[in-house]
Picture 1 (tube, rainbow, N blue to C red):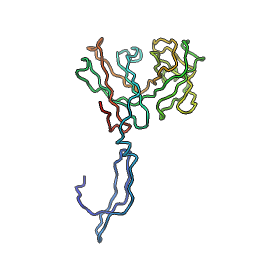
Picture 2: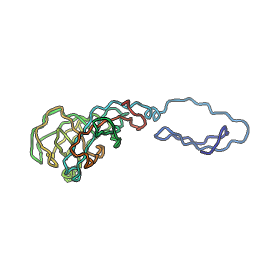
Picture 3: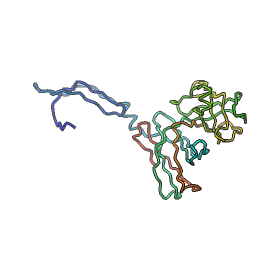
Picture 4: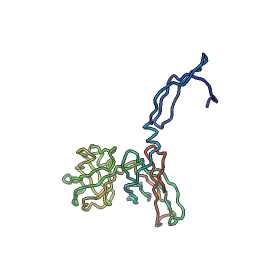
Length: 239
């Protein structure tokens, strides 16, 4: 940016940012001859992370939520799950013409997602007896206990087998394993029902992409293509 080429300077400070770029503070060097300092080199972890290939997508969630969940307008919700620190999420592309053409609709960050390992019976709207035992796939993800008012406002909303539910208490058992209790079930008009062991649990938060469905597409079949990217959002998986 300064137009300098083969200009002799003295480096005073050098700092690497999260993207692997360097900020350099230097002063003009005008006396005598200079040479580069001797130092050992190594691989920057930030550079390695930026260049890492994105891990494969573990699972995806694509569904049309109840109108009450989307402010009365039909929409499509898209979530994506992956494992490992290098998984960042995925680009979402949709096709309304059977896959002939696709349109990019946004980036989907990695979701908070896990597998339940116990049967949960059908229950009342406010269920104080059921326990959802879940192991998260993402070692970076956490679940937090919230006040009852936040649970009732669906601030801990989850999707499981077609039911939207929210929890008040998240007991951290270690290793990404949680017990979720004091539940609000069948939220926004979704059915409660029993859930088998092995069912997937998705947190419905800002990591889930909400895509409005144009009125001209009502009743149409939509195809969704997800292309994974790494945590630095710099490398895409092969389509």
